[in-house]
Image (cartoon, rainbow, N blue to C red; front, side, top):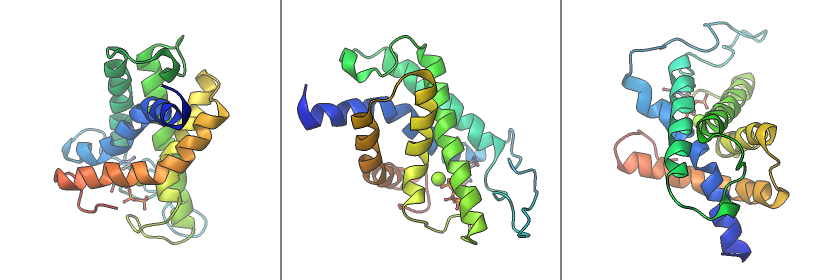
Length: 179
Ligand code: CTP
Ligand code: MG
């Protein structure tokens, strides 16, 4: 498959572990493990929380596990060689890195939201949509070169993919909001 659709398929395929990671913290909310805030309850110089009590180690761990699991499952599915961005990297490592990158992007965005006095959960376009994509691109580029066309395609697709994933989660009864 070539052309624009080939690029889209390749981009979505490599980004799937990060998408799984992005949904995982919501799914893991009932799990009674690691339910501690990443910011340790600390505030920044402005007196507001660094990240907020809703950003937990449990969510972060769930994201890394979900990313790794998604990449391992993908490695069992025959896909065109061109869809695999880092053929030399073990799927477990690749997926865990993408998951960690996506959720690091999410934490960085939450830090900026708190600095701008945006409440947890309050929409903040376009950072809410781009956080995981930017984080995943940075993490992936530590392991393999990310082609410019793939990175650009992902940044363009990030908002619709984010919306589609959240809407699916909402329909499945996993999230309260569908944005
Ligand atoms: N979550 C978590 N740990 C994380 C990230 C998310 O436990 N590291 C859980 C929290 O219950 C959070 C939910 O997943 O409320 C949804 O996460 P997200 O959409 O990223 O949070 P927002 O409510 O949009 O918060 P923010 O304004 O900080 O982006
Ligand atoms: Mg988020």
